[in-house]
Amino acid sequence: MASDPGEINQRIWQVVTMIPRGRVATYGDIARHAGMPGAARRVGRALRGLPAGTKIPWHRVINAQGRIAVPAGNAARITQRRRLEQEGVTFCTDTRISLKRYRWLPGGEQSE
DNA sequence: CATATGACGTCCT
DNA sequence: GAGGACGCCATAT
Image (tube, chains in turn blue, cyan, green):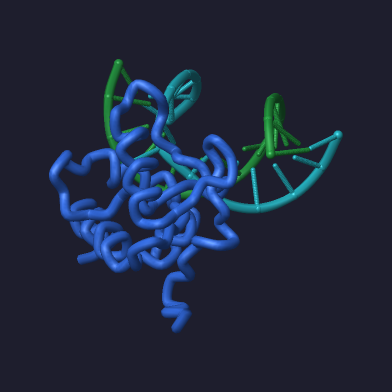
């Protein structure tokens, strides 16, 4: 059943994969859309276990503060920012992103 | 079973 | 906008 941990992480990756290019989503929204409201940490746990050459656009996942949740010491932190800028996502500050402008609404499927 | 930590969120100052 | 406090879920010790 969906109670299996493997089933959960797959559900999370599914939601992350459906995030459109040039757009970002927060852990809380993904967790809620995955059927686990409040389990934002569970999402981070799933993304942390992702391999380097994964097909999952984990770089489009950021925290509610519009910042990269990846701590220093991890090369992924730089990779994420580089990829976001490459997709057209601009940083409001040195570490801040305009969620109000790039936040993707799960299920909203906004036409633009 | 209790405590501490983490790719988090929300509220308050 | 920045920082601290508390809450939530899961794993490690």
